[in-house]
Image (cartoon, rainbow, N blue to C red; front, top):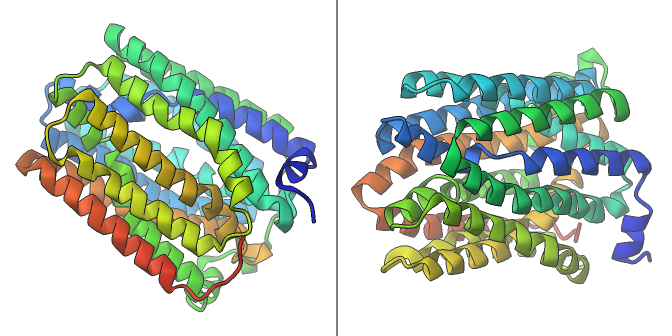
Amino acid sequence: MKSFFQSIRELPRPFWVLVGAVFVNRFGVFVWPFLTLFITRQGNSPSEASWAVASYSLGTFAAAWLGGWLADRFGRNRVMSFAAFGSAVCMLAMSQASHWQTLALIAFCTGLIADCGTPASAALVQDMVPPGQRVAAFAVQRFAGNLGWSLGPMGAGFLAEVSYTWLFVVDAVTSVFFGVVAWFWLPKGRRTEAHLAGWGTAWASIKQNTPFLMLFLACLCGSWSFRQLTTTLMLHLEKSGHSPTWSGAILALNGVMIITMELMLAAGTRHFRAANMLAIGYLLMGGSYLVLLGSCPLWAFVVCMVVFTIGEMCAFSRQQAYAASMAPDSMRGRYTGFLTFAWALGGVFSSATGLNLYAVNPHWVWISSAVCGAVAASFLLASKRTTTE
């Protein structure tokens, strides 16, 4: 049996092109961690900001359905290019908006267009990489993304001190780069005939796939605690008297831990039951916020991020490969899109409700995150699937 790192060495060349493009694109994801702060600094209230942030999630809700179908029907690289170029236009438009209603509309368009590429990207990895190497492949892709994430937010924090406009400009430039690479240097991937590419065919398969539906419900619950990372947590850090520079540094800690630890964790746990690893991960992500129930010095945010990141590594190093192991070859885009739908639906609810709940009492946000993590874990542990992928 191949070792984990031998599987990495044998990954195909086009996969490494995708990994490089993901790194650059993730390095430039400057806007979303600071979106709530940007909106509130434009004179809007946290409640108004919540609707703007929720609009983005509502856009991803629609993108999950559209992107999954487009990826299976028209080819992976074309959809990824369209999403990247469209995202760049939306970023520049958002940088010029100030009223929350306008920001909400642009955020919706951004979510709809940019996240159309998510199912295509995951499906392309499945097209290029054999099943036995997918845990390694998705781990490497996350490594590249989080390496960019660890470096990007620190620079973003300094840029935010000067001008928020630069956050949008850099984000747009890196999106254009990703779109060019996807169009010219990535394969089209698998395409499904029109009569088999509809959502009706996919739903007939999904509704009979109990382990996949359990994963869907777990993602739906887990999206609450994950969304708080870039909404209420960042707002709470600022309201606790800490500067945007520290916001960037704490977000970067997430990426630094992942790039230094996740591949080793994935290698050491590759034979463990995937559902168990995901359950532990969701439980830790949700429970991490409980440290904020007391006073909130800087160290409390650091501890929160460390525990959250350990949970994220346990869950997300395996989740995509676990989901891929349950998807029929002709439905990879739509299965990925359906799982994205869970995150989008949960994101809409958590963005709108989380910031409003925070305005009433921040403690309720942290407690509800822990509860959602426990519920997500229970769904995963209830799964009867025994595969370790």
